[in-house]
Image (cartoon, rainbow, N blue to C red; front, side):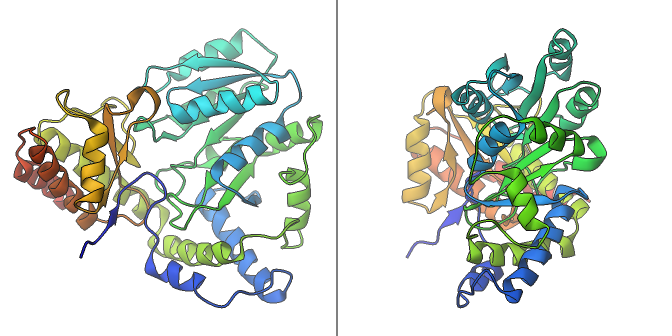
Amino acid sequence: MKKDYLLTPGPTPVPPEALLSMAMPIIHHRTPEFMEIFKEVSEGLKYIFQTEADVLVFTSSGTGAMEAAVSNLLSPADKVITIEGGKFGERWTEICRAYKINAVPIEVKWGTAVDPKDIELKLKGDNEIQAVFTTLCETSTGVQTDIKAIADITKRYNAVLVVDAISGLGAVDIKADEWGVDCVVAGSQKGLMIPPGLAFVSLSKKAWEKVEKSKFPRYYFDFKATKKALEKTDTPFTPAISLVIALRTTLRMMRQEGLDVIFTRHKKLAGATRAAMKAMGLELFAPTAPSDCVTAVKVPSSLDGEKLVKLMRDKYGVAIAGGQAEMKGKIFRIAHMGFIKETDILTAINILGMALNEMGYSCETALGVKASIEELSKK
């Protein structure tokens, strides 16, 4: 019998309480019962986004919210900046170009974070730029972006700051209102600890002004229609009822724990994972800007990274992620966000050491475990 451990950067494990809530009999969404649930979820999302503004909810993956941000904030031929430092930063460019937006990428070396000064240089030299698209936690590389520093810049210009926080919301700090982040998009299957299928968008007053001027046609992902329905504690279309109910459960858990405690917990798990990798003689892929959501590690040159991930998953039941695009087979990624605990990380370290040794790479697994425990024991 094999017990499975999920340490991928999405989907992440779902707490038993949330799973049980989805097993309850389905209810109709145009009823007072669901409206009460949706009202509580809406208030809980404001707490997580750290905003007083309404948070729009869509039935889709996080990419749906990304596309919605493009189609609702912009107009054909608008000029924008996209930060390309990984697979998901590149996705912003791809979506913009699909809508015939003039996307001007800032290319960042994979494994490093964008320098906010590079963004300001672009904005200073071009008043036509309407938006800056970036990523909070680039899960393809294990990099965390300094969103506050970027927001301090964009608030002085016409451009709105749009942040893909799909892999960061509820795991690392992002203060939508206080920092001046104009548009935050997120998904349900990461730090919010439920299955994929819900996407979220928060918008500042500055962003809503862009929405009012947008010339793109839209129907399902219409921010104005969604906001109008939300004013009546409703949705314009059929929501993912069971996922909303599960989200109520996890939002309650998160509010009870408190955001500061949640962020500290993620930072500690990330520190423990990185310490273990170093102690085992492995090299971090993003040492200068590591994410507290996922740790990316270089695969030893003598090994095949895809085989390593497959061995850990199929033989030992520990699912981690491999590299994407140009990093395929060259890095592996261990997530530590959401409902991932200390014992999960220690299990992953043990199994990683076993798999590496089995594949012919000699490493001291015990040193990794020891380093991890030392980090976890720190006050």
